Image (tube, rainbow, N blue to C red; front, side, top):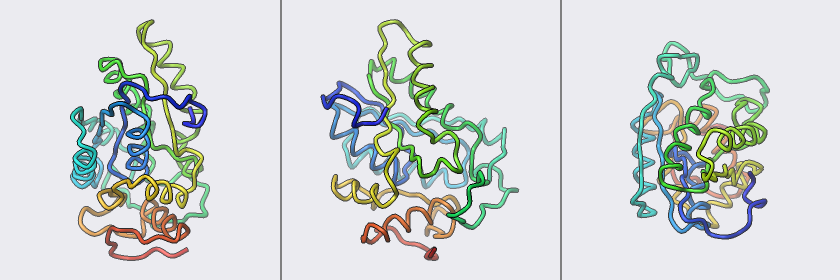
Length: 236
């Protein structure tokens, strides 16, 4: 599960889920460092910032000169609804980083849907790792960001794939704070300037949604300047 618990040897191919956000950008940088080849997977689900996230994904893929890249849509999650990211009738709430409630931005069981697609592609590519930029710091609001969720899903992969398939889920930043993620990204020269985290906007980042607020606080605590522009600056 945690990258530190996996032997430090290069794998042949690693599939890396890349939304286009900061966490997935840094995870891609780590995957690139520890793999012979990376294959980048982007999954749209009818989210508000779909076009902007897709651009960030393509920009990151170009930065790493990735040949194997796949972008797919599971817009049925938008039809299912239940999240402010996919249903415009539900407001994207202003960030409250002290809240322990599940935020409106939670997309029900989204990460399981994404991991299922990543597993299918990894099995075809004969990849042995799937990287995902989950962060436990987010788990108070997002139940599918908890380490135990990924341990359970890895067992599902083991049971549900061919006998000779061996795919591990790697969550290299799951125990890092946002500030540590920023520091890791800078250390690895990850293209943070190409990433996009805002839930609301596709031009200037709003600066006040959960994702923007966590990102801004991470840069502030890391003593670094966020390279993207914001409409507002969340302070807390």
